[in-house]
Length: 495
Ligand code: HEM
Image (cartoon, rainbow, N blue to C red; front, side):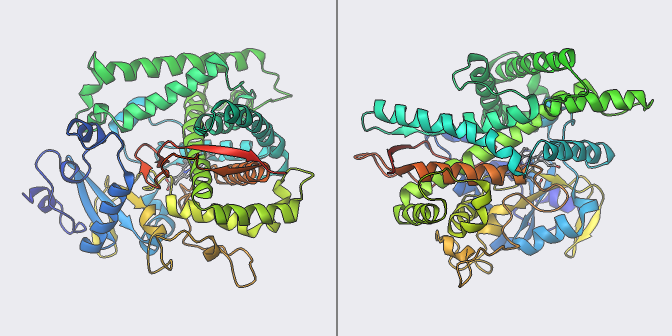
C-alpha cells in the first residue's frame, strides 16, 4: 500500500508504510507491546539504531518513513546531517509539534519551541545568563566539586554496606548532576536524601518514562487519548500536576524574595529581565513568569538524564576495560599527583583521559537520534523534495558509526582521538551535542561535568565488576536518552 508515498511527489525513498500506523508498526514496536509478547523487559536501543542505520544501506542516506500519516525524513552520515542542519539552518531548525510533547510543554521553553524570534531571544538570554554564572568557566568548578565530595563519601559507605554485591552508581550520579542544574537555575542544592527533591526527580523520571515508553506513546497518533481518565493517561496528568505545583512554589518564592541588585540564580535573572522589560514599556514580551516555568522544566530535562547517562556509560566502560582505566589513572597521577584533586585547569594536560571520555561518547551517543527537527518550508534537498512540516531525524548514531569516517567503528579505542605525539585530535564528525543552530545549549556545562566527575572519581577510586556477578552488557536501554542497563560496581580507594 504505497498511497501515502504517492501523495508526496519526489520525497526521499523508503520502506512501504502500513495502513494507519505507517512504518511505526513494522519497525518501532514500542517496548510495552514487546513486553506483552514476551520479548523481555529491556528494550535494546541498539536494535532500533541498527535498524535505522541499516535502512540507509538500502534506501540511501536520506530516506523517509511514516508514523501514522506523518512523514519523517531520516538523515544519516556526517555529510548529510551537516549539510541539512549547518548549511540550511533557516529551513531545518524548526521543531515539530509532537502531540504528547505539545500537551506538556505548550511549545514554550527552548527545547521544543518553534524556530523563530521568541526561541532565539529566550535561548540567548539563558545561554548568556548561565555563562555569567560560570558555565564553561573555572568559577563553576566548586559547585560541581561539592556534589562530587558527597558522591565519594556515599560511595565508600554504600560499598562497605553492600558486602561485595557492589553499588548502583545511578542514583548518586543523577543526584549530583541534578544539583548542579538546581544551583544554576534555582540557587539551591538539595541533600540527596531530601524528600521533596527525591520526589521531584522521581516524578520527572516517571513522566519521561510514561511519555516515551508506555501506551501513552499512542497520544502521538491519537491525541484525544490524553484525556482518558484511567491507567497511564491518568497517571501522566497527575505527574504533570505534581511537577507544576513543586516548580511554581519555588518560582513564587523567588518572586517574593527577589533583590534585583543581587540576583542569586537564573530564576532571579529572569525576574530582573521581566521587570526591565516592563520598565521599558515592552508590550507582549515572551518573558513572563509562566514562560520561566517551561524554561526551568526544559533545562532540568535536557541537562540531567543526558549528563547522568554519559557519566554512567564512561564508568561502565572503565569497569569493562580495566587496562584503559589504569592508563587514565596513570595519566591523572602523573599530572595531578596524589595530594590535590583534579581541576578543570588540568584539562589540557590530560589528553588520554579526554580521548577516553570522547570515545565513550562516540560509541554510546546518549541522544542517538538527536531531538527531532522540522522543515519549516518545502525545500529541495539532495535531489529530493522535503515538504513543509516533515519531521527531520538526525541519526547521530549513524554519524558516529560511519565506517568511512572511523576505522573499525565498533571498537572501543580512545587513541583514535590522539595524534602521533599523543595530543588530542578534534574531529569535526564527532557530534554528540548535535550541530547547527539547535546545537546543545549546555555543551560547555556538560563537558565540565563529565571531565570533573570522571577525573575526580578515577583519581580517588578503582572500579571493578563485583566478583561472581555477570559482566554488565554494553547495550543501551530505550528512553528519551540511551541509558546503560543497570549495573553495580565495587570500589576500592587508591593510595
Ligand atoms: C539540545 C546533547 C547536556 C541543554 C541537545 C541536543 C543534543 C544534546 C544532541 C539536540 C540538538 C539538536 O536539536 O540538533 C546533549 C548531551 C549532553 C547534554 C550529549 C550531556 C552529555 C545538556 C545540559 C544542558 C542541555 C547539561 C543544560 C544546561 C540543552 C538544550 C537543548 C539541548 C536547552 C535544546 C537546544 C535548542 O533547541 O535550541 N542536547 N546535551 N544539554 N540541550 Fe543538551
